[in-house]
Length: 364
Image (cartoon, rainbow, N blue to C red; front, side, top):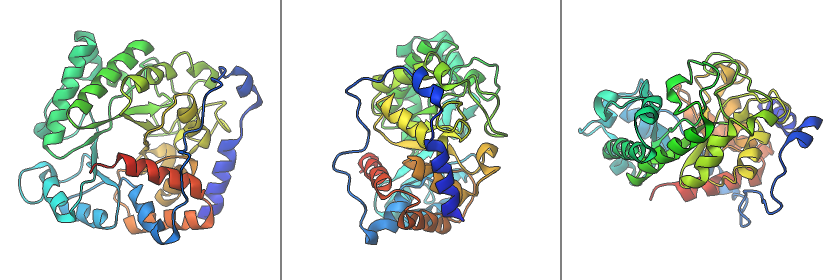
């Protein structure tokens, strides 16, 4: 059932509306696909371990994190409900985890400043992106990003799901002061500066939420959200991403759950839509790691898919690291991905490309 569901999603996502080809700006003749030329299909004996390496589950506490890391996951996410001891100084923190497993791994968090800054009592309290941009130059925002990055890194965190590159343009509460600006170019300039600041402190920045949430019909946390048609996004939503990606090339990208009319079938969420990943790779020339937005705690996905189904669908569509914030059976999810590669539901070359990108970005 899982296989047939994901195949139908992929088939739907791959379809393009006839009007899309005529409306989409001409791509450069030199544009190439993002898959490395040397990509190799994963050996069967390594496949389950490689499947695990693509996953970013939440960590409830030290024991939960250790279990998931021993299962082989590529990283852990620190949700708002995690045990603060993970960020503390005792023997149940992230440093102790790294010592126990014997290698480094990604530790991610949502820390934008303002209303989205987890564990601010430990990591620090910072203004919202809107406030940062209103009262500071891009250079000063870069310094704020560096200060945040220094705090995160000191507590063992090396991936920040920030900055937001959505353009506040529709009065959506879910965007609002999380956006640097109502001007797309300014949003990109300030977002890139913030990202460079994080990265100067040893923390990977993640641009979000492609293809852009600012003018969507609602909040993907509570329901499906539809953007303006694809041809209208090039002159607005895409501008911050097109500005920021080359200006902070070490940053990663987060794929949102937005439905974009004219993108693929027009009603498949971007996070599980192959056309959205193709757009990121080809239009943005983005060759880094693409994370999904939360697959476990957002109704735009959970209303129709189980966590196993959504993780498989995301990887099959082109995601490198599916992310979720809910407490799930990690072994069942690894098994689902492994089985999907074996059955062909996840194309082996798509899988191998994701494994290669994640391995190249994994901290040493």
